[in-house]
Length: 287
Image 1 (cartoon, rainbow, N blue to C red):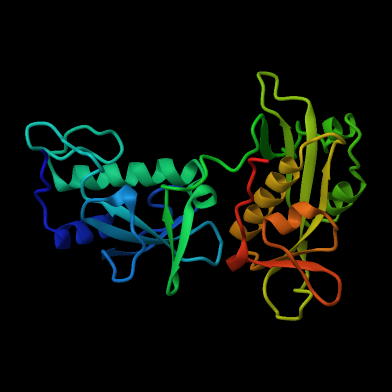
Image 2: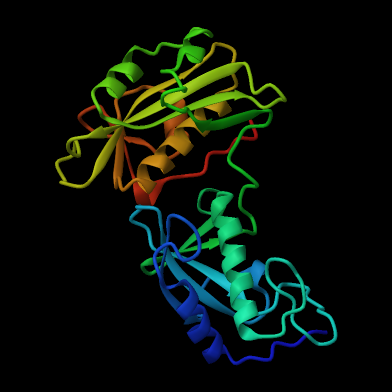
């Protein structure tokens, strides 16, 4: 059985020196603190051994996240008493090597959607992210959601018009310089088609509730007739996450689509729907 040869205090110090710099791990990562395990934490089955906690922000979102980093990976046996690296599993001979393995693991997890798929537990001002119990991804079976590329060679959504989707509002938002995110959904096969839906979120000048917070507005959510409801829910979820990661604290909408309630939108007295960054829900895409 491998043992961990470095003290927790030295780990906190060395890991802090490595990650507490904006972008030190990957684009969008801002390290805020490295701490020993905290009182009141949720149980971390993916950090069954002793661990330390990395506190961070992701993109421009308002949440402060915490991730438990195990000193030894769960079930680690190592080689010749040397601890295995968290990312590669290879034997580690020095604390700087261990720190680099942690940085690599964080990069891999964050770049592959940890913030969107993780199980979340609020403890005080922190939101703990754990990989256990979370969704493998937030996509309906057989479909994929991605950003619609707008650029010199990307067009303005003509491929969506070809399947009967209405682009009038999306193009008006684009031409007006208010576009925050435009996502499309398609059948997940070797051709990446047919396209089956899209969602558009625009920058909003003010929160409809008058709270003065940074806000965005979900203006378009449309799928091709016959498309499973789960596709609309996935589109809405990823669009909301894009908006929040761009700095929006609230997302509102005047659309009447059941998919919006599945990700946490609630109706207000004036008739619009809104969603705070604290209340976003991962939709159930199994049905």
